[in-house]
Image (cartoon, rainbow, N blue to C red; front, side, top):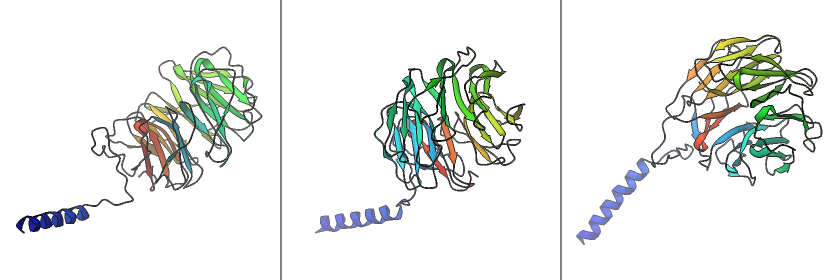
Length: 327
């Protein structure tokens, strides 16, 4: 009798303790390899469970609900509820970049010349062929027909038929790696690369020329909004233009290795770095607010759908989200 009573009391207290410590069902706290919760993300951001430990290199959201992230080891994941749940998409490859000219149609590119296209918001993907087997780092489509990819050994390719055919562009014998590519309009575009190389085209990508060569750093990500542009680098500065790339000047960012930048408009933008920091500007990049964390991993890509809602992805399958603009 005593033994049954003792068991009943122990179980009762155990259930009370469990219920009293129950976590909010809407809060996802992923575990690291030790089984413990990881360090806090940057202030104003919270974790979402990606379901993978693989590196995530690119993220895109069509709206507040539908998003796609892509990375290494055949990793492409998709959400339709703002990132609360992510599910795997059947695609093979190691992917570095993603470009969606509209809500339905997009491309992912990566290692060994891999190019894949979707026309159903990332539910399914079809592989496309290119003559090159180099690694592609950047991609940009100005519409569903015309797009560009860039990568190793200065390779730049162009398509005008939705990726059915890819044509090699003249790059003035530049052989460095090119990391990102953006167009202001149908004729004027820029690509970034090693050794501070910034190349531009004025004829729709048929010919490219070196505009800037700063050998003490590498240029990484590039973004344009209405003729204003920004280029991140391996230094703690961002290269900026207010005249569609005719002239450029430095803007101190305070954080090294800003791998990706994203601007919602001419004033408001964000960047993510290799040291888990997120930076934000509300004055076109003249001043940047630094939001650090102890995550100790690289954040590789960032995107926003409005002033408040955005996502960043990184190493170890990390996904973080903000609903207050990252403040």
